[in-house]
Length: 237
Image (cartoon, rainbow, N blue to C red; front, top):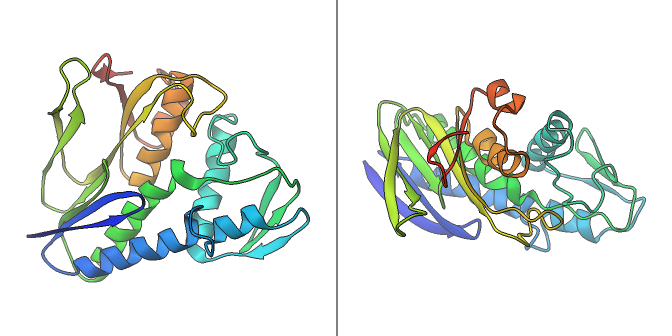
């Protein structure tokens, strides 16, 4: 098993596999080029810059991310919102074309893109015949095949990190929110939340929904076969 790391997605991405690691990094770089709001040529940056009434053709990864984002917005009752309050109904996706209905709307896929990037990298490894490995993008982790990886989380009581669990054939994501966080600019939230789910995309997105809603009985956890923890309590919410 080889382990290699590269700076991508604004964090350090580590991939562990017997072979095909470059394919995983390439898949993540392609996703970043389409979804990062910080890259002027990305689909998201071009949408944010285009005038109201504009139409933009986007790539397959952007279609995949935005389709899921809209689904989660609807199923969470608006809690999950990639417009961050700038206009959740002011953008529309039709096939591979995006439409903008308000100059004020801007999109930020930071709440879902990292999890999707991990899944895309895993798919790239599996397409190369890799049967076991992991991808870890700054705490968004997915493990596949006959391998077990320890999960480390920040110790809220004593500082540093500690082993929280061990993961086999699944995904785990952790998000931290403080007052004024860009991800929830209009709602003061202090939460350190983790979610385990079959796919990292779901785990990543659901951390935001749990942080904002309290999530003790949010139906989306069961809907995506997920469990959630708030780390001040260190027990499932």
